[in-house]
Length: 300
Image 1 (tube, rainbow, N blue to C red):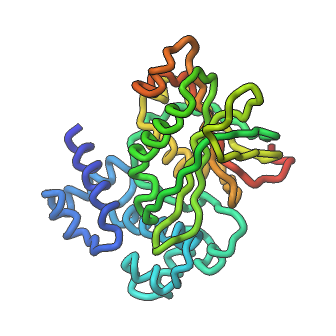
Image 2 (cartoon, helix red, strand yellow):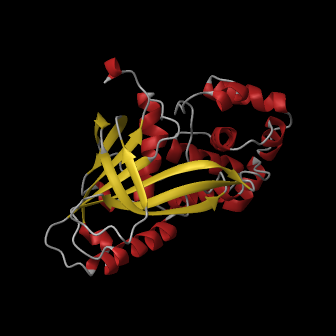
């Protein structure tokens, strides 16, 4: 357990310093262990070498920047500590099987080669299916926030908690299901612009005057992942990281560009509406997480 905590702390520190010097000497000095002992612990805990993990994380952050920002290749290469654009391009192609130039122009995102921050995951089996969503009409409140390409999904819990509090104050009545949609847009002053909308189904028998944002998901193909009550005991963020970092990579299914992820929260029955404000997490029965995908019909 002690060694696990050491590696967890080191991984967090690495995430904060991907744009800085991360030599084996500097990392081992931070950990308080010798280079040999640290590398052995890291390999035992992650099944990766420390150097390969750092490089894969830098290249994965570079991949996000290539897709969502207009930063020149040389600037990206230097930002993530490559000594030249040529060295960066060779390493990138070795990991992703595509050049940075072509990756930036690729129609859809492919999870192959992508490495997300290592996080704890108990290895539960996930219930998955490929489905078509047709005519799902949602209404609610849209929010946008900015984050850099490294931390874009590491510090979102507080924001989402605030967004749901705003939503429930405007919709303080019993819900069977509630939804969130979120997507990442392009850069603004070197930050990613992220949209997160808290929503419910757009029903004719409900008062919609408090809401001014609508979305209609029509004739779209999604990978549906159902999270059981046992999985809900884990950190939700860890689950999503593993869906994208492990599952999507193994399935080799491309994410469809421009479409939002959808979170569908199925709530328990017979709850007090004030719990929506005071303790909303206790009301969740199941979560269905939908990732937009781009596959041919005969692959279903």
